[in-house]
Length: 159
Image (cartoon, rainbow, N blue to C red; front, side, top):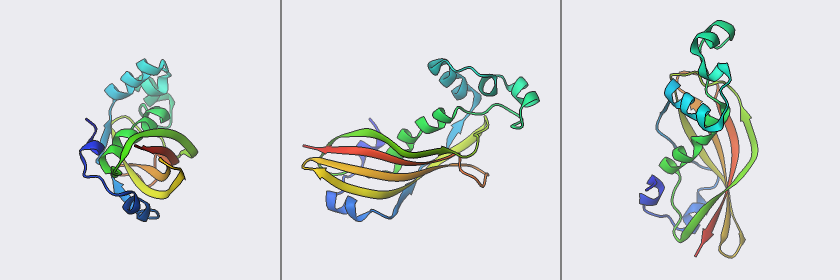
């Protein structure tokens, strides 16, 4: 079961009061070569900058392989489960996409990343449906620049 469902729920009003606040920062998640290779196999993207450490070290400015940007993006779900509150009465949350997404810095193999989440909108669109907007950045341990920044949308449905 996802960690978010183990949390004590907050009321809708309390959730809406969190708008404009940083909600939290996830734990660190290792992006090692094993994870990069597994992701490459799943999405059938085996470009050498991701899967060939020797060649990437020799032919790129990175000095090693780097994670696929979409691999880093895909970790937002697990990171959000760690920090985003569960809203009382929500029966389902649906990923609604992104209004803005930028890959800022590459994530080198062996790096650790974590997500930082700020709730920027929580608007009832119609009875039983809330649009939630979260500004998120994925930080790379020891680096000044984020791996990515995004404006993430979700629709929360109430029973």
